[in-house]
Length: 398
Image (cartoon, rainbow, N blue to C red):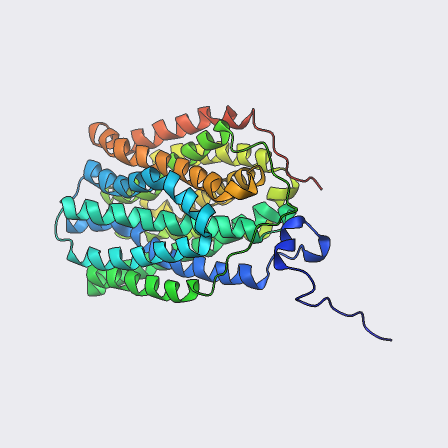
């Protein structure tokens, strides 16, 4: 019996994956796998800077307000650049934008080697670094949305995030040990080397032409979604920045366990339940995970140093579900010709929320305490759960 012939790779253009053709609904294609590799390598570069609050507190004697402002300047730079970033992706394609962001990351990691004090130079370096990170993140998200079958869009965006998340545990854990043994210069130099490796892999990423048959949506990104992105960023920024100095003040010596727990949970939830984002309904998943996210943030007010892993694990579940479900909602309702801009504005709203809490959160913590800060942000997030109510998902059920 003659086995059925396999369709030739050249039988139809690759962009047909965007049409939802069942024959081309496979998720892990070669181009997407290459994109995941780039995202993982860049995630190692990016995740090293999760340790920046510890560096600032231990090496530069920074207090809560200064730690928040240094972290916020990178986010504010990314927010201000958001309209331009989206237009660049739509005009030139994700690949060029991705390469530009990686080059900026190499340069700014090397520049961190020259930082010796809390001064203007540190803020300049971090601001440029924020733009570089935003270029890469927006470009990879837009490229993933182009490559993914529409019926598996949430799962695809979740996998792109997972590639980066895997690095969230590895880089801080290794970086913290390297800083203790060889000094912080080794951490920043290592970040620059990883960014250079990312650049080499990024040259293999290719843009995908938008399918001419893909319908144009008239929905666009609703204000509710952008607000939900802002609130999510507020929770994320609060936890990734202020848990560290809070834990150190409570007597903890190492803080990387928080990120290990976060990463294990976020990766597990996306790998095991990534398809649920598309089947169960992206809006429903987003609403439930936002409520859980709020509870996690508020509960950190009673943090114990030996429970960093557990709190990080809960954080990973919440963020692992919420961020990709919101991003998929944005992508599925965007005009294909402006998808880069739509996703950039969503990511910009996330950065804006993180920037606000980093800018004001340090001041709140200094005037009151870290537990008060976690409580305030958690209550705000819980009160915002209804923000997604008016938005109707068009995700497939099944």
